[in-house]
Length: 124
Length: 111
Image (cartoon, helix red, strand yellow):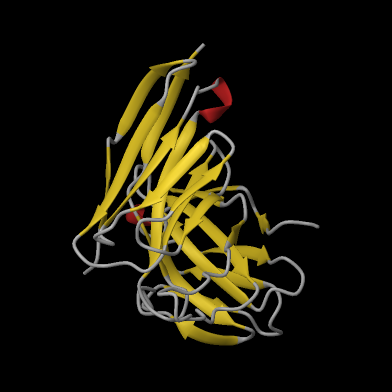
């Protein structure tokens, strides 16, 4: 089974320029996530899609970041204009579905998120 | 907001040694996840824990869900060079599957 594909793997741009990242999730996965991982930190969720609808974009800097998943399969994340502090790894992940099924035993099964290799962005 | 704090931040050990790391939170989690991230790659899920007190193994890795639900531990026995990487704890903080990650523990193994 093919994993999550991302491109490009690396990108260097100057501040105020625009950049776009592409993600193709695992076939059949309804939920797609974009994370930002700054050096020395854990991934931070930017936006979550369920099929082609946005589930959560509360941490997406909407003045400069945008994302879409028009046909409910692959997705693009755009930054326009980029700032120095946007230098990070942008990770895409996918899972079968987002529902967190609770059980009487005190917890539910978290659908496994499968991560792509990431796009390393350097803003100069 | 919710935060996950991992310790130690980094570890330098000799091949063959056992490793312990932990993750704590100020609030309760119903699920604890442990991921490993190799250099240049995305995180890969190692172990998932769903019940307080649960102890789960995956090969040489063992993780425990703390009884208070505010912490979790990961142990690696008999470390080998391929254990090198960054280990993250994570947990969902809403019903939509949104994960919050710790800042990671970086493991270096000297042959």
